[in-house]
Length: 267
Length: 267
Image (tube, each protein chain N blue to C red):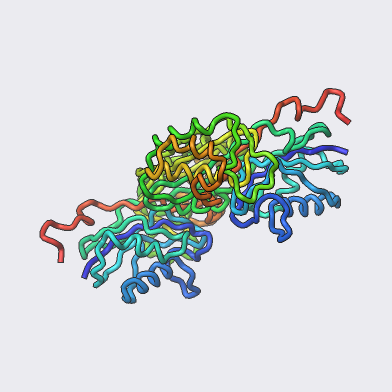
């Protein structure tokens, strides 16, 4: 019995999110079916978290327990040969049996991308929100420090959240403007990326933060409003939920000791 | 009567190329249908050149003659509101009646992109050839100078070419390696872009050059082979035709005097 940790990169455009749903067509469904084809095992994989329909992942970790003896270095190519082209396994390693991709996670980073140029980028059309109106990026930046720390983020959580606690910790939030991409129109407002890192995120949390940031960028709210919204602990206080397609699970970090196999073996 | 020059950016994945074909589903068909919806005119647009099925364009110029009085600054958004999301008009201007997007073109640049990393980039999967095997980029670069100049490029033209002359001039050809993109696996061989500029290109010419360059990069041929292949004037001498999805029409340049309206107006 081995515990395998893999990372998967996917274009979420055509899927109903990562985690299995009654309606099927999720990234998890495809990976589990492919593992079954490869090993004959009907297993359940455990992701580091869910992503909504249309949300992408640059690096989504998942783990599963298997009795298969396939050497670890063979898994990636064996699975990729059978998976759809918009889902790629990017790494695979054996980890201690105690490791859990969600419970062991220390830091998660999401990226949200906004194309502020006049003309949308055809080649990034499924990965960016197109917002050609003028945005005050400095004001958006000024509002970010209010989000940092340990807070109750009820104002930035879906009304359908079923979590017992809405307290989370955000470690870092930054806006980067990329004017380097050489497509027509990019010598304008550029591509604005929000990178946000925390110990966990509530349903729709990053997208509601982005919807609020856009209102600040448009001058509809002041940067200081972010503090007041957070303190209200009321979803109605925040801005709308930004489109899912601009969101990408960027990376998930673990303590090295939780993933390193001991010298004597772990089993 | 006005002559309008526009540029269009398209993701060619789902189209049978730019130029109208008996089977339909070309970029030109969609643009012409959209102009008809907008103005009621059944017109023919003239592209700067063709692109094959699956080839993309960052900036494909086309022109057409119209009697419409729609102000020039309104055209872009009016057409984009009706076009499929993978076709975007990026600019529009009025030009002299004598201007022709193909005949007036001075320099055309194509880009071909090769992903040399272990794992394909999910988000660029339709815009890059995936070639994870080790490539000798220095050898590929050494072969490029032999392509520069005015030559008969029969060795690099489709056998189905119907052109009376295969003499063209290549002004510039360069390979750039981009290791900056932060997706999993990109800290390996990186993304290799070939930029090639000439006064015109024969059918499949860039793709056959790339197929030959890959053989040089793999060590199957020496850099100097490029000279011998060119001199043979025989398609069989060159390498295979590389996949269309890695190819993008990058830009087309005109002399400023051919596109500038005179102060008195041109009609």
